[in-house]
Length: 381
Image (cartoon, rainbow, N blue to C red):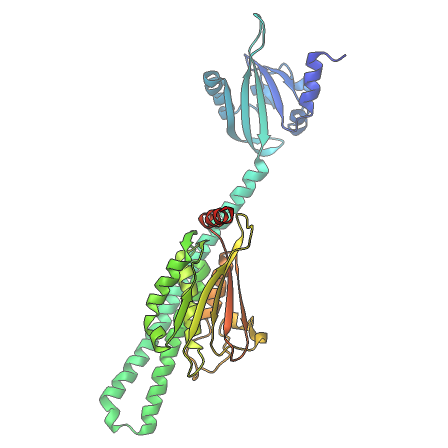
């Protein structure tokens, strides 16, 4: 029959974490198999040694002394005390130490300490590598933003001069210009204006991921309401009616959500069917029985000119236009910006259309926790 001490040794040897049992003077009374294997020692070398002399003094760690000699006596236990130390044979190790004072029974019971050691080196190195990559990405994004702003300024300046001098020519010399010369000036001014718009759109495209704001809970009904106010004039000119459902809260960047829906609604107004009042509907669906972390679908549908479904993925790429510049204004970047915004939010953007029958955009976005709570409570009632 096993004695209590032998049984305790066998039990300790099944534990994956390194364990030490120390006496009141911090001598090693026992070490489990995990400690011996991880720190490359034997029971004969460890038992009886002062903990600080283990491994030829490698365990003489100031943080360990602080815990065992100062903090532990004051509280009788300590949890997740971090020690970051470089061992000669093992290299760097980041350890979480958990200590307990073990009180024996009987009048002659001696104070002992159980010290559990969790090696979190791999996790810590991964966290540090991630932090380094995040910092590098942030620096890269700042540099990209600065480059884009400088490039935009340097490109916009000569274009502003071209348009300014073209306007001066028109005002000062219009009466003496031949019709052909006037047409040349108009073309020059319009081309410069299109280039200015293109540069502005490219800058917006670069900022989608470069300027990364934190995600918060966003009320899409409120966001689209604000967009409709901004588009009031163009909506009136298109005799457009907008049907807006009660939309959910999503976890998102509120500025980019506004940009996303401004692009989609503007697109619906721009590509309306000639001679027909524009109609836009914005609705939402939440999967039944949804759990936290699911995505909702926001559907933006219009009755515009539509397009052939074979071009559905093409229109989400920069500079792709299905119609001539003289027919419809724009640079072909708005939907590409929208697609990048949705992708940054861990969602997706897709389009379904038929020529002459309108277009339906479906946006999948992650629900905010408040929206899930509201949705689940509605299901219960």
